[in-house]
Amino acid sequence: MTSFRNTPRRRGRRGVALVLAALAASATVLTGCAGEEAPENALASDAALPTEIPPGTKLVIADQTERQQQFLRTSGELDKLPFEYEFANFVGGPAVLEAFRAGAADVAYVGDTPPIQALVAGQDVPIIAALQSDPNSIRLAVAPGKSVTKLSDLKGTKIAYAEGTAQQAVVLRALDQAGLAPSDVELIRLQLAEFPDAIRTGQVDVAPLNEPNLTRYLRNDGASVIPIEESDGTSTGLSFLYARREALQDPAKAAALQAYVAAYIRSIQWANTHPDSWLQSYYVQNQKLEPEDGQRIVDSLGTYTFPHLDQAIVDRQQQTIDVIDNAGELPKKVKAADGFDLRFDDVITKTVNESGASFERTAS
Image 1 (cartoon, rainbow, N blue to C red):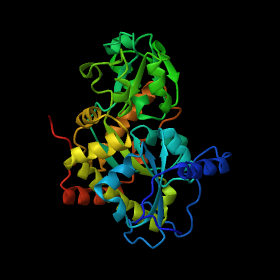
Image 2: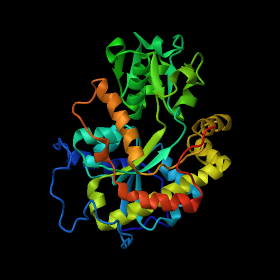
Image 3: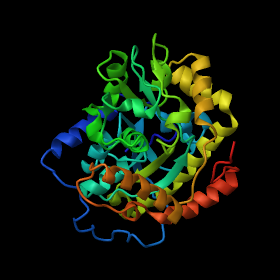
């Protein structure tokens, strides 16, 4: 097996083909693997995480908008990864979850809602790291020609909606804060990738957009967003790394995942301390945005922090579960505590302290 440590490659069609082939092979799989017996010599869920990474160990990393890959490459952490790797790019948590179900990915970066979807689906895909950006990182965009300036104005509107995504929770929190029920609006169920075109062409009146889609959308004539003072609190600003249980049961992959969490934190802390370089390499060169648009995004996301994996983060995730459940959008009850692997807090704590990063955002 060829190692990609010293010759990092960009995710291309082959990465997607890998995932699609695995999905096709598992088309008859209707439920997750949580109930299957663990393989022989599997690492127990309460065992200490190993640190030795045998030669040939490989992780398939599910990415979105090549974000993880670019953090690692630009910071120099990619070349230092002590294992082989491959990136595959996805749009939205549901697609990532299908890759986990097919065994086509080991670890992924997602918003706060896809791990809930995994719990509902019965898939054992625990969170192994958390990333905090500005809580208003997802905004409620308004279609040209529509006047929606308050959350109460959402009544009777068509809203883009994607189950199992962070954007789903944003919509439901917005309705809850406005005293509205899902039946008071028309939820238009779309794929996450369809949101920008749907709002731009007026197929929907409102769509929750994150960056860089939000900045791209706001360049259209008549495009607007609901003001922050109205929409504050609809987004948590949390995102996660989560990994499939089979990877965590493999001692070699578990060790690689621990090393990956450390590299991931260091790479993002590098972006914190080199915002101009990060802006140029990712938003301008990779995402093809104008420098001023990239600057707007960097400013809106603020300094990234890395919360502890502890009861406090579990409670925050439970609050998101409760918002979705109270809206009648969860088919069964689930507990946030079942979706975390708290063993990774040790490597998070060590890396945050060594890198000069922070666990919590300070008041602005």
